Image 1 (cartoon, rainbow, N blue to C red):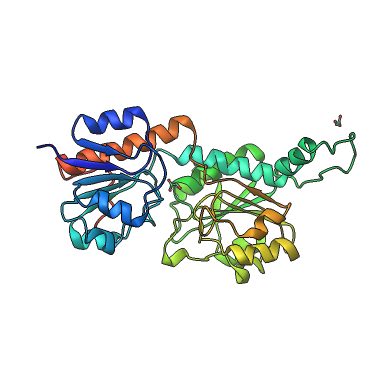
Image 2: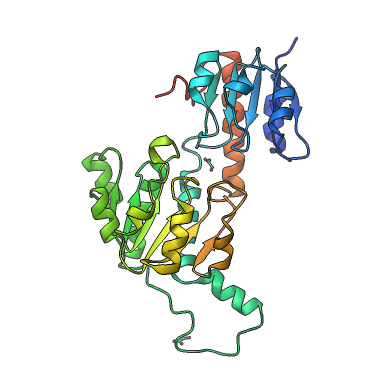
Amino acid sequence: TRLQVLVTREVFPETLDCLARHFEVEANPSDTPFTPAQLAERLSSKDGALITLTERIDAVLLARCPKLRAVCNIAVGFNNIDLNACQARGVMATNTPGVLDDSTADFTWALILATARRVTEAEQYLRAGQWTGWKLKQFLGVDVHHATLGILGMGRVGQAVARRARGFDMNVLYHNSRRLSAEVEKSCHAAYVDMDELLARADILTVHTPYSPATHHILGAAQFAKMKPGAILINAARGGVVDDAALIEVLKRGPLAAAGLDVFENEPALHPDFLKLTNVVLTPHIASSSEATRRRMAMLAAENLVAALTTGKPPNLLTPPA
Ligand code: GLV
Ligand code: GLV
């Protein structure tokens, strides 16, 4: 009998085709996330699963899934998966690194430019029929070119963001848990600084760290207080890396001028004050969402699932936890 796998959300036809060549596939055609109870029920008889960041994989769930051997995330982030619990049960977990860096970096730039130049705020004004004519001082923004870009978290995405900054003649500083090689620093035209210096010097601060207990609220009230008056914060990494309530306070009272945010604590719920602020650009966790990249992510996750269940050696194995 064929191995059985669950696909928890809607994917692309070729993703299902790939899995169907190897497995009996149960898909979720509605694309509504399963409740934890529904997920446990459907997963309890499966050998593997193609999942997304809307599925929480923890010890309670795994205890109900005796046959499960692999959970393959369609995402590079994996804070929805308890790796220790997977390891304890012999469940392989995988993610999709390497295929979404450029798309996520492109989108980070969309947020940087939209936030600094007030693109969405101005469009809303125009759409509301409020535009009565050109004015010299209308929607004055801040320049991106020649500004100092601070990058917190200099992995693949952070590096791709840094490389794009050259076209804007920016001064690029970064902070990371470990310093990059001189060669990589040079290719990114980025200089390493400590956290306090990054906060003090960045005109635009963009965060690209994964979410984990170590990065929970890595940017909060104490860090914002060290930033320049008029600075801009960008987060296309993960909710929870930024303390949303503290961010709202500094967007109201300074020192920050504006923020561009693709991710939030408690998604899809937003802190209600975000919607009342005009100095924020808000998008619904779409930084990797180009057609080509989302297809690549789903296919890589499917390839991980095939490899995990057929050879035991998926290309992007996360377990054992670091
Ligand atoms: C998306 O948020 C991802 O982690 O890939
Ligand atoms: C603005 O539209 C200009 O011509 O400077």
